[in-house]
Image 1 (cartoon, helix red, strand yellow):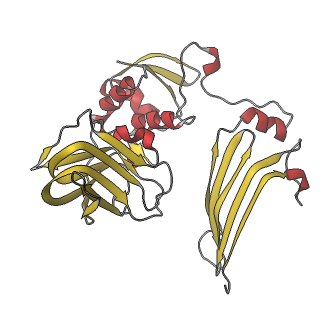
Image 2 (image 1 turned 90 degrees about the vertical axis):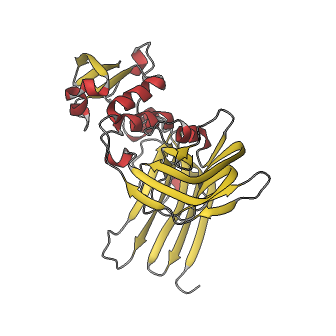
Length: 327
C-alpha cells in the first residue's frame, strides 16, 4: 500500500555461481534452506529475517536502512553457528591459514573455549562478571503485591527491542523473608528453558539468559507445587532494568494466571569484590579446574595481580598465556 511493501523469498538451495555477481569463492558454493523476508515502510527498508546454511553452519541476520537519515546508513546483526572453518577457508583461498588458540586437539584434558558453545559462554560470563559492567548482576527489579497464597509465579516480558534479557536470581518473599527453594519446585522459561535452573541456584553470577533480542511473551516461571504465602518477588540481573517491560503474574491452586504487579521498583547496587572468589567457586562447581588466560585479554592483568582475591593460583605460563588452578 502506497510506499509500503513486504516480500518473502525462500529456496531449498541457491547456487552462488548462478547469481549476477562475482563471488570471492574458488569452488562452487550453495546456500541451503535459504529464507529472507524484507519489509519497506516509507524510507525505511528492513531485512526482518535472513537465514541460510553454508559451510556446515547456520547464518542468521537482520538489519535496516533508512534513506535520507542522519544515522549510519545500515544497522544490523549477523550470527554464525556451527561454521566449519576448514571448509570455508578451502573455498575462499588455497593459501595455508592458521588460527591461534588452545591446542585442545593435542591434550587429554577437556578444553572449553568461551566462544564455542552456549554452555561455554555461560562459563565465560561467570568468570568476567566481577569486572565486566555488562555482566555484573547489579540490577534489581522488585514486584510488590498484597499477601496471598500462590502456587505459581511468572515474570513475563511485555515489550520488545532491547538486545537481551537475563535473570541471575529470582527470589520470592513473604514478610521480608525469602521462601527457601525446594527440590520439588518446577522451573520453566521461554526461550532457553535449559538454563532456567541458574535463576534459582542462589548464585548471583550464574544467569538464565534469553540469548536473543527481547520479544513480548518471554517468561521465567516457577511452580512451587503447593500454595505458599508471598507478598513480593525480587529479580537480580545484569540487564537494562529501565528498558525491560515486565509484568509479574501469579496463580493459586487450580487458578488461571493473573497480573500481580506491572509497575515494579527498579535500581542498581554496587559491584562486590567478593564476586571474584565467588566466580572461581562457581566455575569449580561447574566442573572447571584450570583457567588458561591470554595476556592480551582485557581482564588478564586483574587475575595476575589479584590471584589470591580470585581464589586461584598460577601454575605455569607459555607463549603469552598463563595457566591458573582454581583452589
